[in-house]
Length: 351
Image (tube, rainbow, N blue to C red; front, side, top):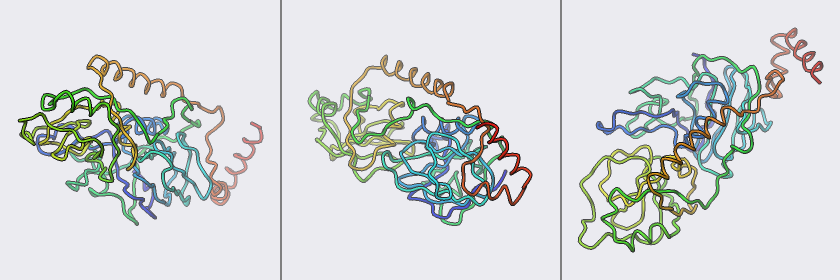
């Protein structure tokens, strides 16, 4: 375990997340975890981490951080400009940082959430089998809350990369302000008549400002309940992707921090499309497409085949992996002049 970074500015909402916390829903503990699973998994792949390593999840903005120990870092997810000591880095690729470096990000140009993976993974206590932050109960993550100025983050032990890695352009997602979400009708579609179901699947909805890790409220054409049906149902367990219709008729897409719901669910968004929901910003537009269970299973298999293809098609440089940080050469010269000379000679030979 090593000190990794000190928070200079935490961003809008930055938490520690991993694969999630499962098996405790009956106690009111939701799964939490990284909302954009693809970006989360690829970030860990880029720095050579095992599956399940904890990362930082940025929302809207990333913040600024002082680096306290050497590590490889990768930023995936939303289009977010990151600099090290003022020099811009490349997203969806690994780069090295060293003590004294300053890592800074701005606002997201597209998408809503980005993921920062580090060598070994973020090291925070494991609570109920997960390092993920569930701020609603103040458990997991960094002291059960979002990061604040002055926090010091540790990383687990892990080997630095020997070669540079980056994701091929074909696999990098592009986040748009208008998307189609694939969904299976139900489980309470019998609470809605044919017209209401057609309205749901044929209309455009906007993401309201009430969008968080609990769920996304949408605004658009009203979805009416079938005549004679109650305005609410007996509360039952809910899963990420469930689309509830509350009394006002405006859909709510439930996400990773919800455990029960008392409104009829007109449809369920595919698990593979939830990460697309997580990247929506207030004002973005959504339309739902109805698919059947067989198609959902096929899409699920294709999704994980694609994730494995990303792992196998990393562009790996033949050159040794050195940081391009402007400060790193100065630090190396001051701490180990002989190593500095060897590095320069190595670079000259390869040119």
